[in-house]
Image (cartoon, rainbow, N blue to C red):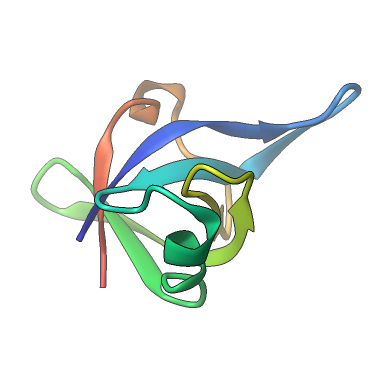
Amino acid sequence: MNAKIISARRGIHAQYTNQYVVAAEGCKSAANAGAIVGKKITIKAGKRKTYEGKITSIHGTKGAAIASFSFGLPGQFLGRTGEIA
């Protein structure tokens, strides 16, 4: 299953640079997004480098989820697609 990175998780006063909002294919509701919580997400950068994270919670009611990485991703990754395993 593929997931697209939408944006970094943000609040009024802070931006959490290691957490990102992702939209998975086929997830149109919070119940569908709840099924992917706990799964791993992998994003490839070129041929060798990969970034791995974990889906930690749902975000909103339209099927988005929060993915947490050990450190922040480059800014060019917004809009990029990753794979949920």
